[in-house]
Figure (cartoon, rainbow, N blue to C red):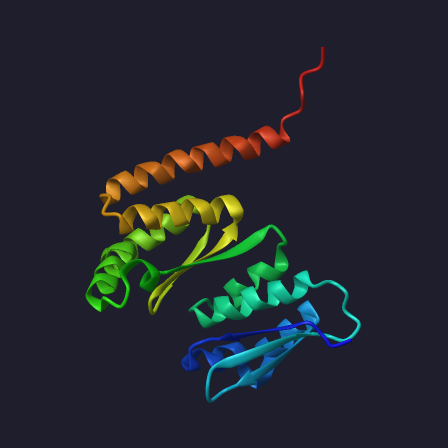
Length: 192
């Protein structure tokens, strides 16, 4: 039986980050997720192969998310959040799917998402607790499903032209809801 595998392409300038100093990042991914990475430096292609004897196909998908996150601008340490915590997910918004090839629209929206001196991106990160990177024509985020969903909604509001204060109000409301949900998980049920 052949090993399960998948193929993705990342920007060539991110291949060095994926490999890491002395191959350490690549090796960490391979060891932690029981995969083999076959990297084509010239094209940016990465073949991810599930290691022999590994029976958990979800490791292949997790490795694909880690490689894609690094390829879309996350540092290896931030991308490894996907390995350290099973409840963590990776989300990617491709602005080309929204604006086509209109570079001016993509540049304008990226500027709004980043904000003056990175303020908007930082605020979204702080209020959602998701890590976020704007790279090329994509907006990526890493966090729990709820964190990433809130960040995605905030980005979509900005794309649709909402004012920043409206987005911040939404995020503050969402943050209160998430904190309340977390507290309810820890509260003991009342005894009668």
